[in-house]
Length: 264
Image (cartoon, rainbow, N blue to C red; front, side, top):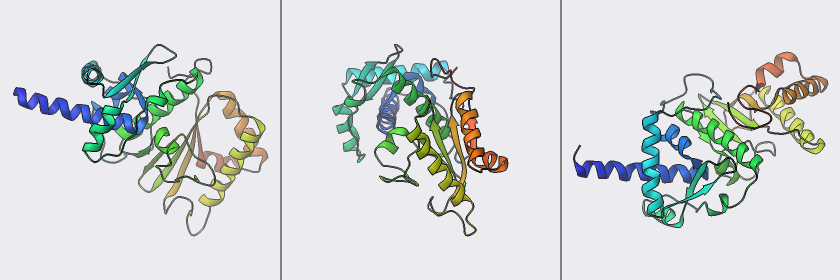
């Protein structure tokens, strides 16, 4: 590779990082390494895998080098998260660079100024799930994109609700909820109303109407075993059959600790 080729590749990597930060709001070095320095599937091969992607050592090194250049160029912001990790977001100069390429973007300075440890853990998990979905070939809406109404449900949501991550593939939709804590009564009522709408929509003889012609795959809960047991019990009490629960919901309760709210 010539020096000119190396500069072109470095510039391309920088733009890819800036675009990723624009989609996600903020990311850690290992998130960017897992997302950008491995091949993506062209389309999903099956159902989504909720496990986080593990970057290689070389991928981490490439991400570190790219972030260092962008930080020195003041195109990204850097902040320390509650667990000591460094997180990166778009700076104004990075927004301008994307704008020159025709990519609408917004600075992430407000996203990295202040947040609780619980909010940080929640976003880390949502980001890791979204990254896994993208790498596996799913059309993925990140938590940041959903918060900005840039997703299937827009501003109003689907049946009045928004997910933490949305995965689409092969005409199906996987709705992901990251449940880091116990819900209060009003939140549980809203969740049950949403799940009832999903059950009704999935059972329409003419096909679902809430998903722009796509079908419901599953509502996936990233949760604790206690949350899983309680929700299943409540759904059964509301008249859900065991078959319906298995068909439309999925509980992933082994990937993160209830105490730390982080992936093992």
